[in-house]
Image: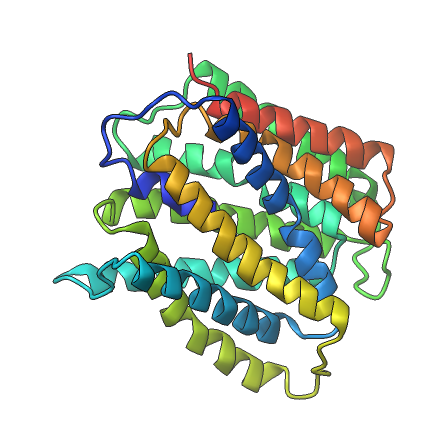
Length: 312
């Protein structure tokens, strides 16, 4: 669900942060690697389930994991006055992001999906430049955006000369564009979170926009996916547990616990490995071809993430 994007801004009320030590850096790198497998898990799940049904089941699992942990930690889940309308706006952005991600991943490869959805830090930087005081684009951030989108262009370049044909499995342009749109919505969600609901606890934030989004996926599936096949094989079942339990559950909770104590600015740069790990996992588990343009594009996107998040 890519929940890491909305966490850091919600926890910035903790003013004093420790410098991360070796074990925390290693754990953060491990989480970055796990997030890299999200698009892969979505692609595997889509082999047995249509996009909206997959999203519904995935976030039911995520809601159970985070909800149970929130209750165990005694986090108040009730809404305060004025929060519902802001959460509703955030939920609408979240729904569009997931729709674009799942549909796009259905029409492209897992490795390409990983690259394009991880462009979100650059959209975050652009939206923050426009709307958040003190978050202006620096020379380094601008260079990072240019490098990253050079990687995007390199990745899609082989498809630009082809006629758009969704029946051609080697033409991924439609899927690539949809996942890129998902990355844009994810970047927007980060900025909206920072602007509107910085004070809400991240567990409560996730519980509510997951809860509010589930009816939308259910209705869309009932309207548009009645003729699709609904089966859960061993592979798609494991993929669902990975998306909901590992990514939306463990990764979110572990990352939040890290940010409660350690400096986010010194850790978020480690997530430049996410697109690289996603490409590697997709090659090893699904046999995605490691073309020259795909490898170069993923390296450029990873380098751009590093530059955008780099601190002096």
